[in-house]
Amino acid sequence: MKIISLILLHVFFIAHFSITAAPVIGSNAPDFNLADQHDKTHSLSDYKGKWLVVYFYPKDDTPGCTVEAGEFRDNIKQLEQRNAVVLGISLDDVESHKDFSETMELNFSLLADVEKTTAKNYGVLTNLGIIAYSSRETFIIDPEGRIAHHFDDVDPKTHVKEVLGKLDDLSKIYE
Image (cartoon, rainbow, N blue to C red; front, top):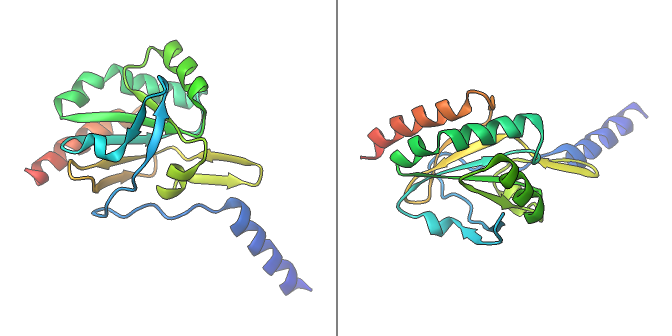
């Protein structure tokens, strides 16, 4: 009976709490086709020739997500100087992104992954049964569309400084 209980617990855990593995450094970044807060569609190929910072976050208008979005907003010029574009992605819908973007006066796009496909393809989808959300993780994608770096442990207050430093390091390697 104990073994059957353990097996059932394991199956439940895998079905309800698992996430797909993130793409590995050097592999092609998973493509996406998502609408932003202005209902404009974005795809990975739109950013060929630029560094792309794709940050996943759990939910619009929550404390950590507000801090992180504000940090990207306040440092957008430094990112642009490094030929980098920022995209935020969560499972929230376009309307939620529009409200959040307006409230925060964001100067970059937030993409709505309501079908959860992109979060799953990047290995950041956390599914807790009836509750699903994106883990707070960031990917830097090189100008050729490959995963150059993955931050899987993000502090919203200091993360943008880490991203800027990593972009500086990566640009030396890719020159």
